[in-house]
Length: 213
Image (tube, rainbow, N blue to C red):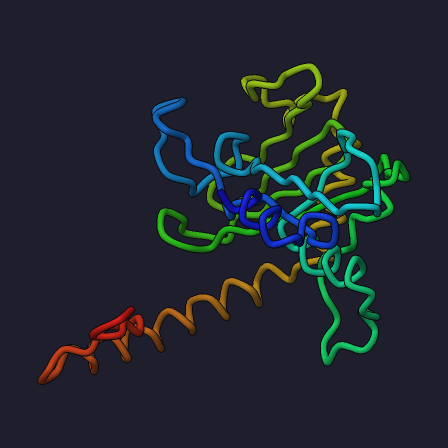
């Protein structure tokens, strides 16, 4: 319906369309529901970009993240990213969409919400997926040979060098002790706010218009 509307308004040839989601859902696979983990069912999301006249339809196998959507749209709109007030964590996917993929590109993801007792981190590069949480054993999967992520290679002697590569990258990207302290302090502040909001007339944590939402 959206594409038909663009077409009927004469905007088909000059409108960029992006189809994306924020996370997947395990839907009972492996006995898991919702997201809250880095298995492909929860972490892998659709990302399709149509930009008339910019590039031809093709499949891009290079790892990407939702953080790449904004810099991609900026480049397609002709906006210089350096003019922004703050640097962006993602990178534009325009060159990859044109065929110039970075085979060794590494992307990162974090999860620090309900269901976790310690920061959960994921690094993805080439066929490899590395998952770290201080409360759990490390995980290393080769998605090319093990697409169902059933064979954890993190404790295999022949993959120690690969694990160390990801551990070194992780430590250079995150200060885990500081991150954990920041999260717990933030939680304590929100607990205080929540308890205060429960006094007298209850005010919802999230803003919700009382009419015409």
